[in-house]
Length: 85
Image (cartoon, rainbow, N blue to C red; front, side, top):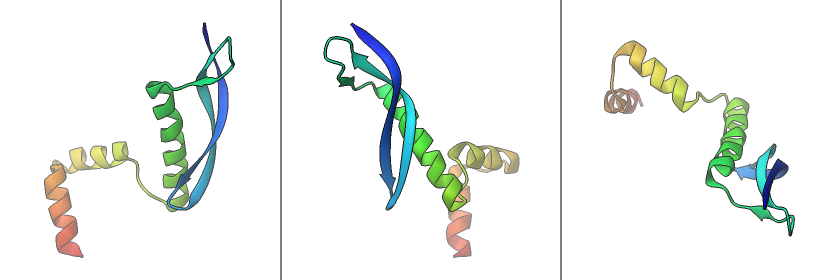
């Protein structure tokens, strides 16, 4: 049988460590952690968001909304960024 409980792990992103507590699955017979892509991805995203906050970076969602507001594609934004460098 499987059960869910909070699990704390540390992620290293570009040399910065982030400790994240998020739900994870465990085997009720062995109490061992069971990999679960959906839950693992959520925990990883929490760490990535902490990194973005620390570095003052925008989220992918924010960038997509900004492009939509301007009415430009990913390619157009990339091209304009390259030209400005």
